[in-house]
Each structure stands twice: as C-alpha cells, then as structure tokens.
Image (cartoon, rainbow, N blue to C red; front, side, top):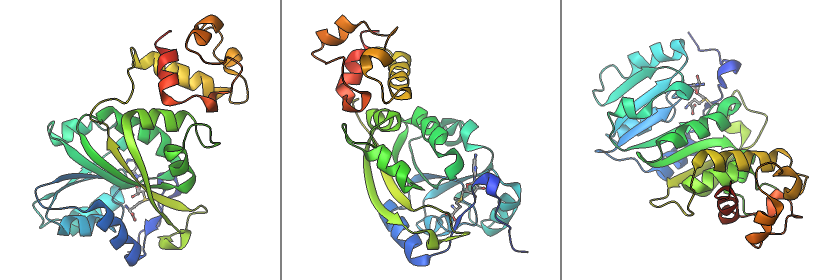
Length: 256
Ligand code: SAM
C-alpha cells in the first residue's frame, strides 16, 4: 500500500531523481564513513547513501515508514534503523561516541529546534548537509547588518562554517511544499571563532537582543548589560541588534 504523507511529521518526500543525485553528490559519501540520516522517509536519500558502502544510521519517527525501511534494508548489514524523535535523540549514544556525518531532508515544522539540538553534538560531527526552507538557510548564512541576520545566524555561525549550496523547487517533492527549499552545508569550527566565557549568558543575550529587533540595544539589553559597559567596548548603544557582529555579541555576553 502507498504511504500517505503525514503533515504532522512534515512529510514532503523527494521524488526528483536528478536532485537526489545532486544532493548525494554534494554529500559525497564513501565506505568507511559513519553517516546519520534524520528522517529517511521513503529512502530517497538513504538508498544512494547506502550504495556508497558507508555505515548508515537512519532515524525515523514514523513507525509505518520505519516498518517499510526495515524490509527495504533487511539484507544490508551496514544500515541500522532507529525509531525515535530526533529532537530527543542522543546521537553520541547511537554512534558509541564515534565521529559522524549528519544529513537530512528535515521536517520544516521543527527545523529550528532540531538545528539547535544537533549543535549539541558539534564536537563529534564532521559535517552536516540539510535540506531546509530557503528562508531558513538564508538566515543561517546571513551577514551582519543584513535583514536576515538574527539569533539563528549568530548561534549557528558561532558553531559552524555555513555554506548555502543550491536551491530546490517545490516540484521536486511529493506532496509539494508551499515554499522554496535549499541545501546547506555546515562544518563545525575546529576552534570557536570568538571566545565566550559562558554559553548560557551568550544564548540569553543573543535571544534578548533579537526578541526586540526594532529596539536599540540600549533598551533591549537593559538589565543585562550597563550602557557604560556597552560603550566601553566601543559599541554605540543606539544601534539595533542586526548591526552587531558575532565578536561584538561575544564581547557583550562576556560582560554579563
Ligand atoms: N528523507 C526523505 C526524503 O528526502 O524524501 C523524507 C523527508 S521528509 C521532509 C521528513 C522526514 O522526517 C519524514 O520521514 C518524517 O517522518 C521524519 N520526521 C519528522 N519528524 C521527525 C522527528 N522528530 N524525528 C525523526 N524523524 C522525523
């Protein structure tokens, strides 16, 4: 029987073979590698990934799809299926602490929390290739001073080098999503690009600054950083958060 796509699991299956090839070529899998795929669905990416001979771990939340995946990969020793919620998954537990590559055509309804969740494994992750809404990829890859520069850009760029690879039209999926998609490559930095004294303070400061985007940082950071302290860094308290770069966010959070 044909699987009926479930909206609640953000199911838009890739059906364009040329694009599947283009995505797999960008990932460039090979045997000896350990690859984790979030949301394998109907195996559009999993099959060619498995062909490479890589050790492949598939993590799927939908039990019906998992049953199909199980029969599809029954005879492939190097493919392992895990049923569960990627938002709650301990990736290091699955790989036994071994470094891994992460890929996925991610469910768009949970893409931002999922990105923040996977960044927890940054030290073990070799690289990540994700399909996301193009608008989300633009925010991840944005430059300071641009409209798209925000909390997601700052947090992701602190952890990784971000490269937007190519866009994918709605017609490449069944059912077709309403938005344009894009493939992004994330490579965790070997050394953090800026020094942060306390990660929690950094997160809080960045969130608070962008929760009031239209306010000046004098107002939005009230209660967190004194005006004089902002000025001591050579930063004008009259600017808005989108004018601050990563190093300035780090310096401000180191004062809190
Ligand atoms: N990889 C397939 C493809 O490219 O055609 C399917 C992509 S579809 C956009 C997203 C997939 O993620 C679905 O298979 C869905 O069931 C699965 N999924 C949704 N939420 C998930 C979660 N929290 N944890 C793991 N998988 C999830």
